[in-house]
Image (cartoon, rainbow, N blue to C red; front, side, top):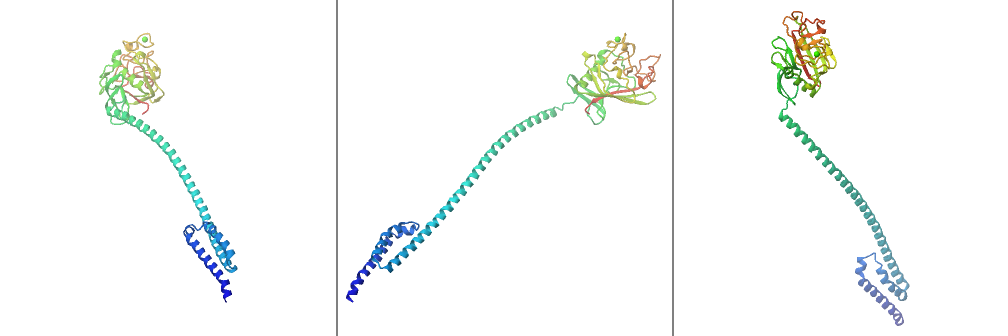
Length: 357
Ligand SMILES: [Ca+2]
């Protein structure tokens, strides 16, 4: 028995001492290990103790201790693997976030580009608004001035309308409901048409009766914009006809108020004004015709004579519809009364209006 105790005592002592030592080491280094399970610190610390156990413990105890240590190592390896997986996951998350940052950066770049475009568009719109504002101001000024036009209103009641245009004073003139402006009218013989150049230039008569508007006004109106001409005629028997010329233009006084254009003819009276196209105006005191004498002096009234006339709407007014003493100085439109130059019409109205109407 004594001999057995001698053998066991050292072993028990060594075992207890080893156990205490292990515990002491575990306690000493418990905090770092718990805080950082993935660390290899414990393995490093335990290695010499394990070596000691190999020398001092029995084979069974050593086996137990080694197994425990192996389990610990296995656990630590598992934790390292876990951390590795977490690291991979975090790396992937960082990569994703970088991708999102790149997308956001691209979006910001695109938005900046759109902002530049929008700023340019706003600048253009500002210019357009400024232009429109100036245009509206101009139109408003014109409307406020109530600037009259050099022709009749295209529609509205018939009556006397004021006409104002550059180069001539405002004047009142008859306009009908279809925009026609009367430039000459004969119907009762109350007005003398055998007048000098100045009267034909300025006009004469009464706009509510018989009158001639004046060559200067006719020139300005037809020079300002293209006009057409409509002539209404009536005989003593009450029959009527008309001649419609799609163009009508009178030259300046320097051009002797020539009949510069007539355009195409359309009507029922015949085209008796055609031969007077491009002829100058003649009065008894201003001979511009091709006749060896003065047509206006030999006949009656001013006209675009040549040698001398096929039409003569400023001729002498004969209430009975025929001249006296076989004179050929009446109101004539040859094609409508078979070139019977003793005939004389009892109603004439010459009218013009802008071609655009
Ligand atoms: Ca002559």
